[in-house]
Length: 459
Ligand SMILES: *Cc1c(COP(=O)(O)O)cnc(C)c1O
Image (tube, rainbow, N blue to C red; front, side):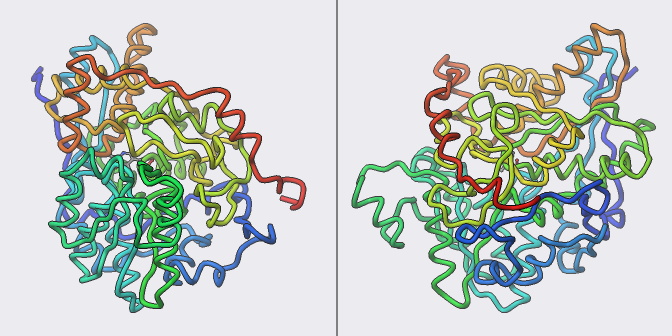
């Protein structure tokens, strides 16, 4: 038998025609989103200053499918369908009877799954007459994806990048600027919220929470400007379902069906992308499949957080959503998988966890890098530090299969490459990378500070 990895490719015309909305197949919908002041469910009009109405309607949609507009499909064609690989050399290295498959989203121009939603969001904003979009970015993956989409639709993109990442990852910033976006270190003096932070603390290294406040403030100021988010929201997760829909067809080509699907979770979008179409089949009476979410041990919302209403940002400008959260004031330690450093989890992923439809587990940074390096040496692709969590989860499942003598099929989402994250690999090889721990005390304090809205609604 050949030791080569096998690639399953769909033809271009097999790019999905619709996005899939999991809510249509769930036994109950997620709890309502609440207004931060009144604690009453928010309506579409409440969100209109920030998002175009087409995206707001997708956010609250209950139909099973939403047609992908042709201009978006045409752009997807540049890198979609993405390949699905059988990781034969990794299987051999692990000496496991399991079959390991991975869907590779790193082939997009920005190097991750994020352009799947960035292109869609840019399209709907352009269509509604928007001229400029503001956003925040942590490690820079979302900022560069939206910058790419903005270039295609001739939109001005204004990115607030957490200052510590702005300094640590100059190449992500250069990528955004190459696409024509403006990238500003946050906190900045471009906004009132940024200026206020700088006044109090001129040396502030920034946080995702502060950057969100700056982007939201700027979007609210001008009629022709809206705001975009790269994860967490229902419509973002839905745009990512092209990943799982393609994977269903590709697993069919491979003559297999996954026994277990693994994905890493920051805000939940790449996980939802690969998982939801399979979960939908199961909920409609299809085959059973185990689903495992993998998160960083240093920011473990699904495994150590509380399922409660909370704010999406530190500045408390956003509506309240019910989700697994570590508390909006919780600041995770600065580990390298920047895309997973979020205090909450998507309300939809939180809801299906609460329904018992998925499992969650957490691994520390060094274990994940070890897994990523083993993967790179077998399969040749350098995973993003975030994706290393999915690799680690898949390897754990493969070793369990070895112990139990089972030849299960394992599918995971390799959601991005790590070409802009090589400093993290260098730190790993030189022993500088350490396992970060959050303070139990700080977590307890952040959880104690959760807003008390539980008993005010009947949900
Ligand atoms: C942004 C990002 C993540 C985390 O976001 P999710 O919404 O949880 O997918 C994970 N991996 C990569 C490569 C990312 O760019």
